[in-house]
Length: 114
Length: 116
Image 1 (cartoon, each protein chain N blue to C red):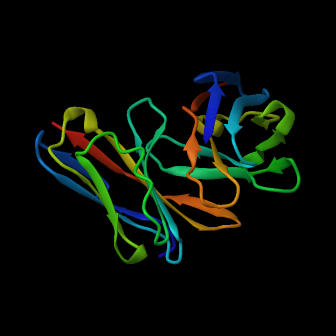
Image 2 (cartoon, each protein chain N blue to C red; image 1 turned 45 degrees about the horizontal axis):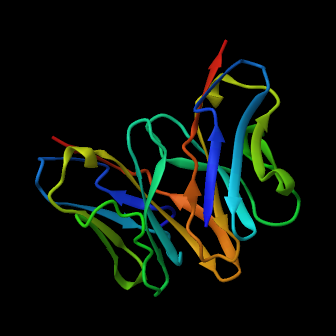
């Protein structure tokens, strides 16, 4: 079985500051990990994903995440926040091998202040 | 089509009525999911279809909820005798999945259900 914990339901940063959104997972099989972003009144958009290979994954809009097996973490970062990054971010996990459902964390709402 | 299509985009219904929500997945995607997103909440898993296998219904909150997927393509989520707590955005996603891996999930824009 898989589960996801996102630490911090709300994160607030200043424009230009580092963005760090935390995600820890548990999985009984090697995981596939995802970050999705949801802008107000829109659907979910894939930011990035880790399946196999390189543990540092780069996504759209300057975001990246690092899979750390020893820490069971997949934190999302961006060096410099932009006002347009304000949205809700969801971490999700599924088991590798394909036939596993995608389980989401509760989400983190990111606010960016000028 | 190019993406996952959900209809209707908005639905207002009276308490006690039945509703049907439709999802058209991406052609060729073998897996289809329904999630529910209540106001200020995360995404709650409802049901998962994978090819011709029996669906994983473990997330359905009550026996008022049911879903089917016809011909391995279009799916309908039915809520009977709707209650106000059913008000939420219902999201559908599809993915190309086989025994070796999952090749990415694509979400529809959702159906916003309001029970009055």
